[in-house]
Length: 58
Image (tube, rainbow, N blue to C red):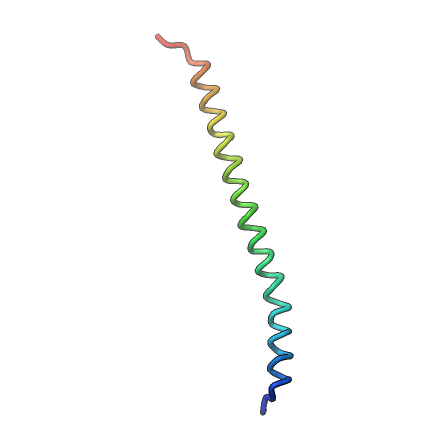
């Protein structure tokens, strides 16, 4: 099958319409993981700070 220039551009447009949303989802998942890590880190700090403040020195 011979591909002319307009067929190639049409195929490229179809591929871009498929890839763009996938890239957006990947970016959102990355951001979500980043925020989950930050929250976990903060919760860990708070947890250990609360343990340290509640431990009585002997």
